[in-house]
Amino acid sequence: MQAGDDADSLALATRDFMAARPRLFGIAYRVLGSAVEAEDIVQEAWLRWQKADRAEVQEPAAFLATVTARLAINLARSARVRRETYVGPWLPEPVDTSNDPQLGAERAEALDLALLFLLEKLNPVERAAYVLREAFDYPYRQIADMLETSEANTRQLVSRARRHLTAERRAPVSPDAHRRLLEVFLTAAQTGSLSALEEVLTADVVSYSDGGGMRGASRIPVVGRTHVSRYLAAFAPRFWPSTDVRRVEANGRPAVLVSAAGQPVALLSVDVSARGIERIMWIMNPDKLAPYVAALDAPDAPDA
Image (tube, rainbow, N blue to C red; front, side):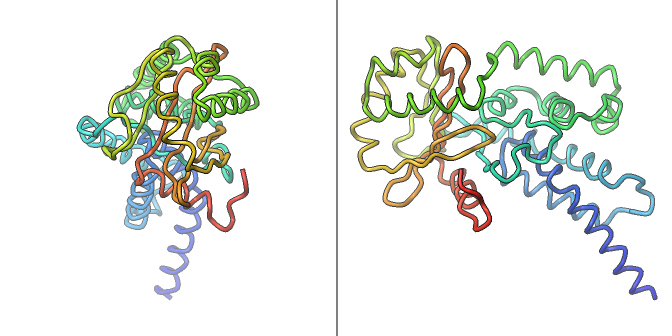
């Protein structure tokens, strides 16, 4: 009888965990900006759930979300130190959102690459508070319990995060407008047309290349319309002729996957406001591209 009870308990625990899993991954990914690290957090949450006194847990989903948020904050603190020694600009690891446009959240907030990049500038607790409120719509009281702080402090954390993000980023355009400008930019970049590039870039545009130290990726951001246009025009003849491009979706936004000889070499993503292209993000680190491409090409993945 005991063996049967244990089996039933584990089956129930597994069911509760699997039901919560998309949300757990979504929380961890937004806090960390890394799908690989988020998966590690989810696995650790599962281990802790197996060891927990589940009879005392009234709301499994809330318990698991709390464990996940705290684990993600702790890992984010150590990741921040590691990223200070990262070679070149650090950009978030892209995820394929074609199956889950909101990545387990109530709303598809704090998900696009540009916003995740800016969230990295917040401290991990501010980031978690913002994510839990804006993406998952948790009440302030519940977030306070999850972060082991007061409700008043939680409101301050979210407010500070909002102010920082508003100051750093202009409102993005619609997906259709984003896609149209991305296509114009792609054509201009491929042809190396300075005039066409200057027309779509904002005056203070920044181009980031995340290669993790690999050869060919710029190790410093390129800033300003003139510098970025000339930079893109200069490498166009060397970079584009031998490549294939594929329109994809990454983090809920249109993007372009660039391949050479059948191997992915870059994911191109742009941050677009009503003014034009504000940020250009080239994710070239093979360790970040590989999981994204694997998910994109999975048998059950829909075409973009």
